[in-house]
Length: 470
Ligand SMILES: Cc1ncc(COP(=O)(O)O)c(C=O)c1O
Image (cartoon, rainbow, N blue to C red; front, side):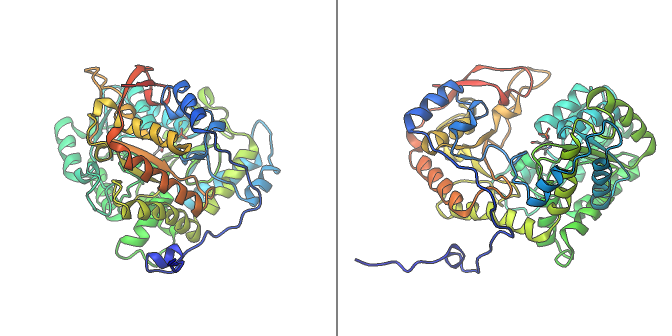
């Protein structure tokens, strides 16, 4: 019998291994139910992974939103909640952390990201105006539309090609934006909506050079620029690693410079900021802030809590500090890349380059025999769950919804299934199990049938839609 010489993963890839900059203090048991039980659970959930019970899931890669493990310091902070209705001391800690790390003057807490999206959309968009952005995000675009705006995609073409290796696929195509300004006039543009990294493109980053040029274009036309800062820390990692002149700058410094080119930002703190719930909205302009501060009491709560408990704001203030640490970001993205390396090595089609928060399986190439109207990415999410109890998410035709004017499906070029890695939650062994399951489903791909939608809700249909097998 021959024995293979054991090698660490680092050795297999010809480099030294890295490790997480933390150790585990508390564990949450996982359970895998049987294949028959998974089949029953999936039918009950209408083949929609959002409708599964978490107790029926083994490794949960549905989302990185609100699924992070908090640190001992954050949990200690939870005990220091000042639950006063107004003027909680935890609010001032949060305000200080946002000002220090993101650089904006005025800060409002919100219950989560879409609370902030709602407020900025209502205040900064006049009905009939256009909102150019670097690819749409589901909730962001819907709030822009509900405020009477029309989203226009101005991301570079490379972002729509899962195999293009452009290092900054989140960049704005300034010629596309310039053409829009020319066509409709600067006065008809509410603001530019810039996300870093770009979730729907595969967690792809925006370069600092592109942002600087974008800022100049905006200033020359008097157009405001707002950021979706949800994964800006991860975006900063790519700038540090791949953009000339940033290798010696810290993540915190890069985030601060990035924000200095914007008029404000909204945040789903459930991602980068390492909390289970929370968000914020921050702007520089006094008058704009005045309006937002008034509107927030209608929808979220008083401007010093905005839908959050004092303890939530304390955990968030600490989470912001921790999220900026270079070794944390390196290991977070290192884990995503580790899974990406395994899958790439095995010839599984994924979005390249690997982005910040997830591996995006390219369902078009995975199930080349399925047409897009048979929901290949939704099918792949269902098959992965059946194989191993791993929960992923569709990011394709179901997520893209319908065209507001024609009522037909939006048919995005990208038809993806997202394996989203929660921060500080799973180990390398979990990633191995995930990779092996993807490979098993890939091996069976040719005999897999697609899905038909049997129930379609009006808003953000991917959350609650139901399907059945064709
Ligand atoms: C890029 C981006 N923006 C905004 C949001 C909305 O944030 P929330 O889920 O906290 O409402 C998300 C959440 O998934 C997101 O990924």
